[in-house]
Image 1 (tube, rainbow, N blue to C red):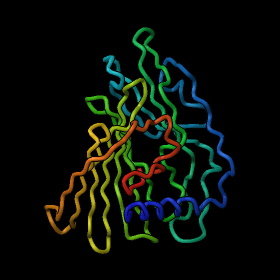
Image 2: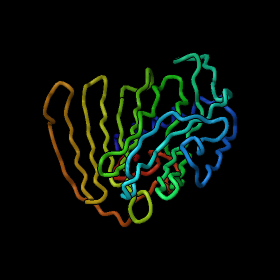
Image 3: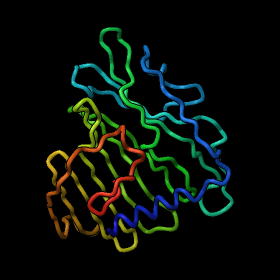
Length: 240
């Protein structure tokens, strides 16, 4: 539970800094289809990351894209510790399937909350990128580092595969480091095989002090569509 509490602390800090931010976020509904990627970018929004690859195994180049609101009202001032100002704008993750019949794209999924926002002045940018590998797995990378308030830093990767007509969470990897002690903990979870590997060690050593593999039960895989936010699901003492 130690890691769970540490990440809870991270997320609680995220919600503290919002004094100049608009009270309500009005997420636009993306169009169902379009001839190009730009057709899915609403007015007042911009692309901050994208990846291309075959996600639904039809040998067509699909697109995963992260959009961010360009409204300057989300650039907030800070009069305390950390940066002087930062862009707390909301983000949208969208997946577009290529349609070889008309060379256009169809919206496969829109997630308004899975990509974390940069909304605390002592926090580094939490979104680290997206990718699509040769097997059609969509990966979303995040990073938590604070200039003050916590000695912990962590890297995370969520892995989704399009199967059963939806994007299911099939894997999760995390690396946690205590900057004071140098202690490290790594987690690698395969939700398809229901196996979890945990490594504990130190940055001073090339090999881990311990490696443990455990099995777990899971009735149904989580999906991207049902995820209200990243790190909102408590699983095996972790927030995923």
